[in-house]
Length: 226
Image (cartoon, rainbow, N blue to C red; front, side):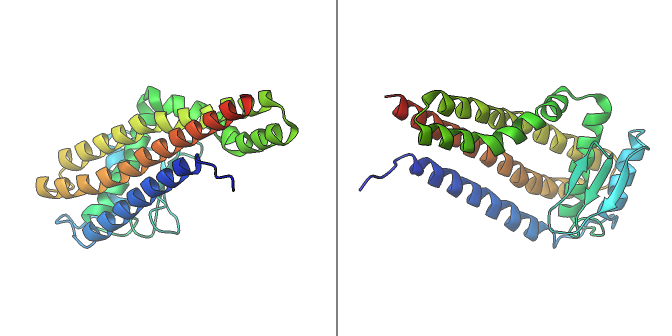
């Protein structure tokens, strides 16, 4: 019976992603039980950071879900989840500050963020179209279609790679704000950093998974070419 050895890459990618996801959830849960001495909420933290950086055109909103926090540059909204918006834990304040880090990046024209925003359509198209193009190429016996599918998927990998400096920089800015404005005490900043570091590993895992998927597609394309 034929067995596709490239599935090993899929399994490796899945394991990496599951480990990163489990780590961020467990780390957040641990430090979500540690209340900050300041007692300010995630929403209040976000408002303070934005005002201190002269940013008054961004709205802070509450969104449903767990760890669904994100900054939307199109609508200029910082969206904070149930776990973060009204919580005063060191974990929640770290996440809220991280999203404000993205706002600051947008405000100052941080180049990697601009690049990531520009290639979103390319990545979205690549994620949706790569496999259908490859499958069509395999079914029709047209190697050039398989190669086109592989090339299209490169956009997904580029997006994941550009995301890394964007996320790490946002966390760096967050910790500076939390410490510099006295929102968290130095020892609390260290705890918040653990949460942000765990969250950053999910982006590393996503990038690794995308690279492994690209490698798999290249192997499939080369096999069909031969």
